[in-house]
Image 1 (cartoon, one colour):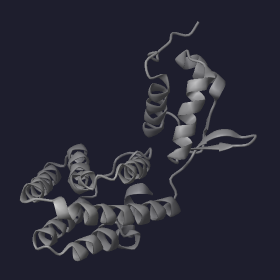
Image 2 (image 1 turned 135 degrees about the horizontal axis):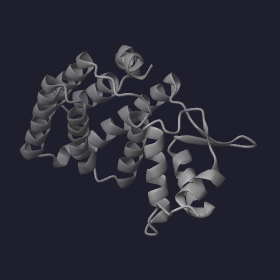
Image 3 (image 1 turned 90 degrees about the vertical axis):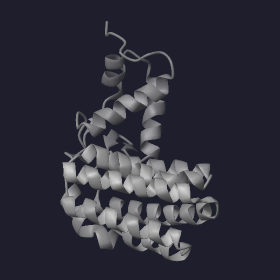
Length: 220
């Protein structure tokens, strides 16, 4: 009898995290099928929480439930990245516009400090730290927007974009460009030019065409 490796508390969430981590680590590779019988036996659970977790993963774009083929792990295609960039750019610029009236000098300083941390991470070649500080930089104004649904959707899109199963590639030029772009955004916010700051977000920072050469190097 298989040992139950999933805790009974929050079963669906734990199964979801387990599967997402397996996909991220490429233990379940893009294009392959997830066998529900084998997976449920391995985890020592019924198919109900597994099915619920797979439905969430399908909603987030990680898997596709295909008739007669089963549950397939979706590869991240260039067209997917284009669409994700367009959506994040629009949502982040909207969040920035909404949060700007309540932003303070403390928020601007927080963003500058996080950008400095990113610069330090680049100098040390620390990708994980850069990634963490980069998310935190954007979350300063995203969370201030107070739009819970926008925050939820942006988080889902970024999970799909950043949790795609591939070896992490360090592209120093791309990271340095992000830092420069962040500084431009903060400087514009401090000057009160919210419209230009939003334009930088949507038409530079999250522009697929502007970032395409780096995207192709990183993902493909």
